[in-house]
Image 1 (cartoon, rainbow, N blue to C red):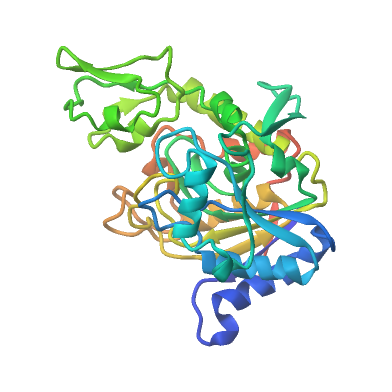
Image 2: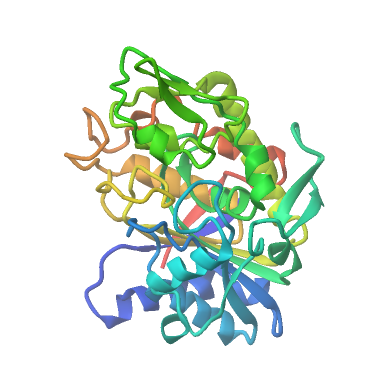
Length: 367
C-alpha cells in the first residue's frame, strides 16, 4: 500500500498558496529520494492545445522545477508531438505553443525539449511483454533521462474515462508511431444523428472523412483512430465499439505507460492537479466547465495509487450543475462513466497492477 499525499484546495494565507503546497508535497512524498544530484530530469507536462486553458499552469510547473533544482538535478520540460491537427503536431509548433502558454525561461527557468524530436520519430524500443506488445516505442529523450517527474492534470477523457498520471505516461511519452499503435479505435457514423455539418471533415488530420451523396463517410483503411472527429461532433453522431475498441485502447495505453518508466525504477515521481476537472482531455482546442469543484493537489511515488486516489476523490465530490455531468450530482456517485458512457476507467487500475506499475490500494495523507 503506497502513501498518497494531498494538499486540499483553498488557502487562507501565503503559507497555503499553491507554491507552498507543491513544496510541502514534494517534501512529504520524497522527491529527493527519486531524483538525484546531477540527474537529467524529464519534467513531463502537457503544454495544452491552443484554445485550451485548463492545463496545469506554467506558474505551478515552475515551482515543480524549483523543487527538482533544489536537489541539484537538471530538469527539462518535455512532452511529445500529437497525431492530430493543431498546435503540437511537430516540435516547432509544439515549442511555440508551449511558449505562448507561458512555458518559457522567464517563467519556468527551464528549457523545453520535445522528447520525440522534430516530427515524432525520435524513439527507442522498450520491452514490456504485455497482451498486445512485446516492445513499445517510447520517445527517446524520455528513455534517456535519468529520472522523471510526471505533472498531470486529472480530468475526464472520452475513451479512457479519465486522464491522469497513467495516461500522461502511456500516451504522453509515446513517439508518433507509438501513438498510432495505441489508437486502434475505429469510429463509425450514426446516420440518424448526423446533420452533415462537416465539423469532422475539418478535424481529421489524415483527410479520411468526406461528404458524398449527402452522407458522411470515413475511410477506415487510412484512419489513425485519433477520434478528433468524435470529439468535435456537435450531435455525438460518431461513436466506437466500446466493448472491444475501448478495452484495447486502455490496455495498450497502460502497456505504453509501463514502457515509459521501465528504466526508471525508483526514479519516478508523480504530481496530479485535481483542479479545473474538465470532461475533455487538454488536447482539445477548447475546454468545458469543470464537472466537480477543485479538490487539491496530490503527489506519490506510485502512479496507480495516485490516480486511484484522484478517481475516488472526484467520485466523492458533489457534481457541478450546468456541466456535462447529467442528472444526479450527489456526493459519492460515479462521475466519469456518466460524463463518458461506455468508458471503463477502472480498467486502468487493474491492468496497471497486472503490468507492475503499482498498486491501487493507498493511504491518503493530508498535509
